[in-house]
Length: 305
Image 1 (spheres, one colour):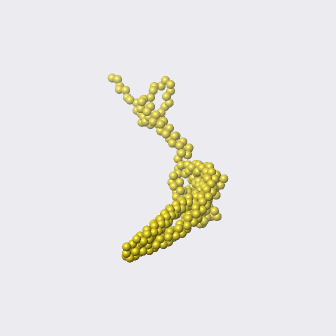
Image 2 (cartoon, helix red, strand yellow):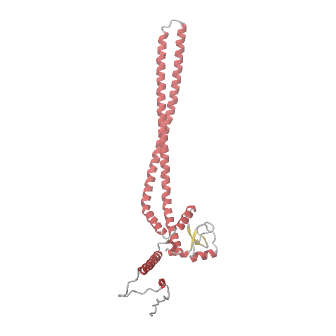
Image 3 (spheres, one colour):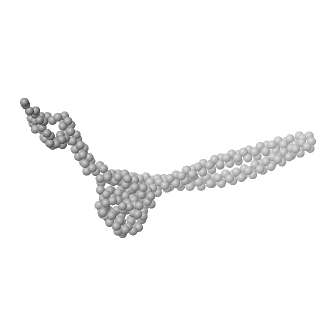
């Protein structure tokens, strides 16, 4: 009787068996083995790609603290120069705006004064017309007195003549008052017009100065802003937000300051020796415990020069 053939015993699991290289002439591997091999290769490619990204500096979190501090200090220096340019230029736009507002106010005032003079001239004409009308009535009443039939009609006409004479006196008085006010208004208008002319000349001078300064500083400011954006690439968003907040709250716009004579370069308060040592180690970003500004040492400053 023939003995049954026994199956070979595997010494390890198939998935853990070492993969042998395929030699020309060998039998092709199974579909599952090929799939497993492709999966391993894909994972290896992903791992290498991810490592290359980190090494290439795309992730800001991989940048060293020292480089971040250098970038922050450089960004502060650039922003300070931009601030100086805008301060020099910033006073002129305010002066120009003030002059424009003053000129607009003077023009409105002159227009109102002119309208008032037109009303006064019209009132003067009306009063003079009233005087002429009253004189015409007086002549009419005097003619009627020559043909009265009794004393009562004569007395009535006399009263009318007296009333018209009073009207003439009142109209002439009002006309003189209006004329006096009109003369004062015209004199006031002339003064405002002279002042307006002076302000317009000042405005033209200030505008020319502003245009010259803008022409001189526009390219410099553009280059500085470009440098500022380049420095921001090395700083993560969280630090940029903190930097912007500190700059906004600081009166002089300084968010990153150097240690000077063992003190903060922003608020001039003394910094403990241990903190100074930590700052020189460049292991973490340290802020002043008094003013909140980011502190850097001489090493960071010297790296920029």
